[in-house]
Image (cartoon, rainbow, N blue to C red):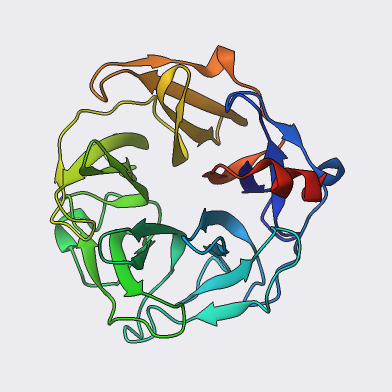
Length: 282
């Protein structure tokens, strides 16, 4: 399954499905499954969905271009959703400019979920303040929850020494692997994906690679396919989804000619479901 949005995210949640993880077909005639209702702008951008150990699907998303929280909802079947909630994860920082591209990763050992996202707090990380788009100078922050009712205090997750955004974390070979975007625009644009690694889900993380993608991409999402470790991302200036693959997480090759997505697919998350879930959506 691939969860995504269209245009500015104003109409909500879109789904596409695939049998091989590479070629995706839109569901519901590419119409929204869920309209956004929370946040200043009431958007549903960058929807991230994971399935918990009890079978419940949990989703977080970007609700606004300038807000101090994110959206959250849950579902048992991806079709019938709970009431949407606004999680004010950056309310403690009154000057926060944004809360973008949240993701969820489950820690099996601790039996808890980590929610993480990118925010800009003016006055922080001044060494890279002039390198981003406009006033944005992001770093990654996180909170932890077991039940999506009580949350730990928000903390800094990762400062790689550059403006960063769009992290997604997977446990691969007993290590926590983070794919993260270098959001540097000036003096020379990066806008590409690198890899960081840690022994624990909440870090500390360390960059272990050079850029593995082309420039001007966003929203990496990972799936192990028949072609190996596969990373999809939104090539937003080229108006298409692109992908790369690797056998060892070190040597990556282009895969974009071997994938297909519905036209207009934007930044989202790939995840697997049981056949009966897909049957219900179809």
